[in-house]
Image 1 (tube, rainbow, N blue to C red):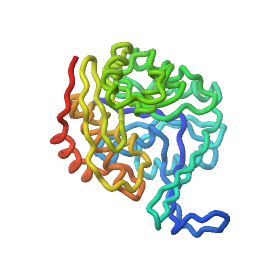
Image 2 (tube, rainbow, N blue to C red):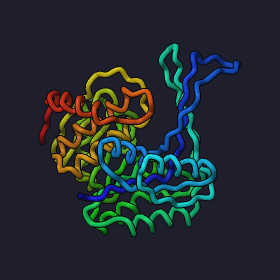
Image 3 (cartoon, one colour):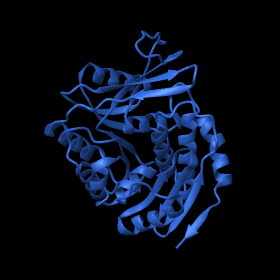
Image 4 (cartoon, rainbow, N blue to C red):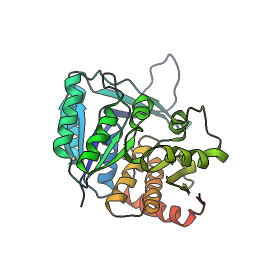
Length: 317
C-alpha cells in the first residue's frame, strides 16, 4: 500500500476548555484543559489514524510547546519526522460556553521560519517521498516561508511520482496552483479568491469551478461547503455531494478530517466519487464530537451510507 506523508509547516498545540458563561472583566472558572497536537497536516495524520490508516507526519517544532507537540504525537503512536525550529510552536485556545453551547476559538500567528528551517523540511521530504506515495500538505504558510513553497513541494512530488494533495489558503495557494496538483481542496472563500471574486453565487458555482479546472493542471478538486456538503470537480464534470444534517458540537479539524478521508479513500482504491463522499462523511463526523478527537470510524461508517444514498446531482459538459 502507498505511504501517506503529511506536511505541516505551521503546527499548533490546541488547548480546549469549557466555561459556564463568558462574562467580560471577570475571572472565569474553566474546566481542566485538554491538549491536542494540531495544525493542518498533523490533524490529517490524527484523523487517518482514527480511520485505521498510518502516516508519517513531517512538521516544524520549537520551544517547550514544540517538545510538548512531539510528546503528544508520540503518545498517539503517529510516525513523525521533526524539523527543529528556533521559534516557539504556537498554541491556540478554544473555549466552549456551556450555557449557550457556543465555541470561541483564539488563534495566534506561527513563529518565523528561517531559510535553513524550511529548506530542511524540503530535504527531509525529498528523502522520505517515493513513487506512488500520497503527500498531503495542509495549513497556511507561517512568516518566513516563501509564497512559492507549495509550488516547490508540488514539483518534488511530480519528480518522485507521488500524488500531491493540497489544502491551504492565501498567497501560498495562489502560487501553488500554477503547478500540477492531484487533489486541491479549497473552500468557497478560497475558490472565490482564486477566481478574483468576493463571493460565488451558488447558481454560478459549477460553471466557475469547471472553468477553473480547464485553466489549471489539477486532476480533481473538491470544494468544501461546510454543512451543505462539497462539490467534486474533474475536467468537464461536477457532482454535488450533500452532507447529512447533524448537531454540530465542534468544528475544529472538520476540514482536515475531510482531507484525511479523501486521502485514505484514494489509497484504498475508491473511485473519485466514493473518495469525495467518504471525505464528506469524515468531515461531518468530526463536528458531532465534543472531545476534539476528530472523526471516528463508527460515526463515519454510518454517515458514509447516508451520503452515498443522497448523492444525486450530476452535471457534465
